[in-house]
Length: 112
Length: 114
Image (cartoon, rainbow over all chains, first blue to last red; front, top):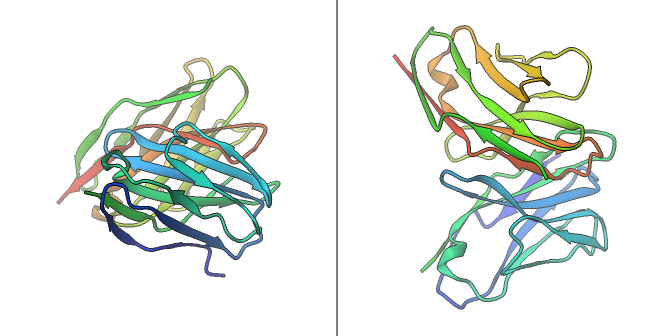
């Protein structure tokens, strides 16, 4: 198993550009989520999904969209990037009946 | 609503000394408690977790944490640290409804000096 795979690892965007951060897991986990990590603020939940076709907002959803068409993939879309979205983004997944989440290696995004 | 507070942003310590990283939480419902570790330029790895039962939980690399319900704390301890323990440590809570949503503390950077 590759676990949770995030692509790209690094990205620089200009203000107003759009892009999609990819997240894939091969563990057949039902639960998937996106967090952003900022210095001194820990990780904050952006969006999460409890299964294919089901998504919901987390603590900081503004400026981000998600969809979950398959169990394996959970992409995060930035429609119009802003400097405030400069952050490190982590995707995580969890299987039903277990409590621990597995994290990807992160995507470091800089918006200039 | 749930929240987590890690009381120290940085903890410098000499190698082989003991260390305690403090974590307090608040929640109106039953929670699960976790400590995650993040090594430089890597993702988060689960260090240990408390679900129920014994209030003292241990990890395979010598860390332990004690759940204290009355003080709403889940402090992380290690009796003797190594250089390789240098990392950022995050305390997190999840609802016992087990949706996978986690609330994280601000993180504590453990700096182990030779």
